Length: 447
Image 1 (cartoon, one colour):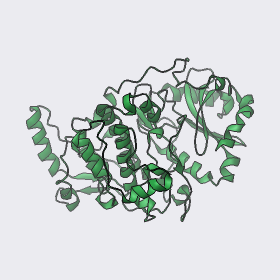
Image 2 (cartoon, rainbow, N blue to C red):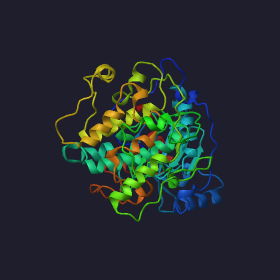
Image 3 (cartoon, one colour):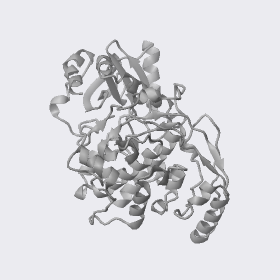
Image 4 (cartoon, one colour):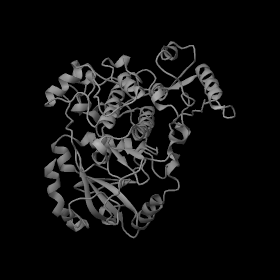
């Protein structure tokens, strides 16, 4: 689940508050069995078959093929389920290490979040099991690597604007779903966005996330909150639709998108805009939560985190803006000569755009709206993803059918029978079975 390299340092210690998981104020239910959108996934059947045979799952049921990457709390292995051709990513966390670094609650938070997720752009937790020494999470394997590695293969190390629009649209839906579930992500960066075999993305790594309560609100068109966004935004057809394919909360919602498909495009758009402006909007954004934790990746930290002012869900929209900037320009906007300079730049420097590559006005405008220094002025801070979806940068995106869109072409990966990214050949046979796990124990010393 982790990328093989990380260009940015992550901050996991809390200077004046409890750990991330310690802050959690909402305990969700554990979802076991097949998720609705994964109902035809053969990997579920393979896992259940092994569980029925052996009563419980363990590392002995997997061939560990190679190490995919190192994370802050665990090591991830490409693994094949015995007696099947199903590939998984298994995150192995050493309990002694977690205890010594006071990261047990972080690992627990990640597992609790994974257990409630059911979304095409978020991981599926197929199984969780423990040994005396390790805790293991069995999740999707993404053969396309992560966006950071993929970006290094692009001309000038930046994606085309069309590719960026595709990736950030899917990330937006993932963040929207997380916020609906009461999860503030807090660690968006290219290294945490994996690419599936079909080119669509998967947002991963939730040990920095904060769980909180969320209260859905249905706002009428006369609401000051709704009206206040009209001066900035150009609503699109799907602006007020909560997409049913990616939403499975504990409360029932419906789609408010007007059906105006028979008219020509311009008249259809005008009619849709007028109707959408009169429709109520479902707002599910955890705006009331506040945290004082100093967590995240330096170049992506929001100003309110750096200043210690306390932060809420708006930090995800700041990191979303930094993420968009980096995909377009190949670098982050406030990076300094060191971490301290970077943090100072985030608080005090004005946003500036490089002359090259050429980026559209709408893309730059969206970045400006997302990178407002004051969180209350940030696009998405009030109504969440609904506001961002309405921005002209996303014009033409069919949010309900985005999974059917053709993904940007992936480079030809090294073919070793697994479709995995090339790694050191010396690692290929390093972790073939449980007996050889001891030979890989030195990995935990690298954390």
